[in-house]
Image (cartoon, rainbow, N blue to C red; front, side, top):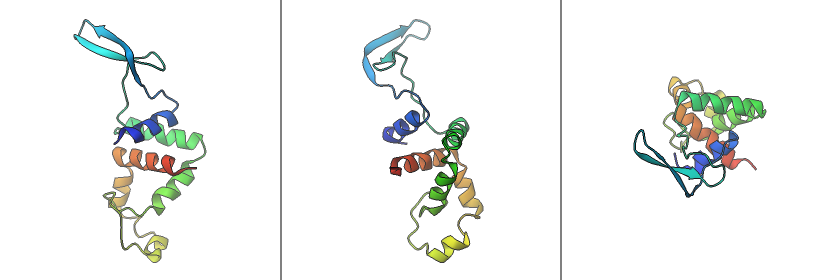
Length: 128
């Protein structure tokens, strides 16, 4: 996932999207240098948005903001197949019959943490 999307998701969850400043800390235990965020003064550690924890946190946040149903509608109306590729020939009858949505491959794709997080990022980016 691109940083642009990770930033959207991080800020949606109410966390700081850490920006590297001039400060750093040295950890003598593992001999590493850690950069400090210029905005919040915390160590920079950005979330990858590829885990079940990420999926759960985003789902709870969408529910808390009363956006869960709108997000699902957006996900189900997207012209994507189970692999996240654009569907060129998805006609309205296939969409209205729900053919795609009850397909185990599509459900598996939707519930994959990486796919789900990307869908949420796409949804948030499109929101006015």
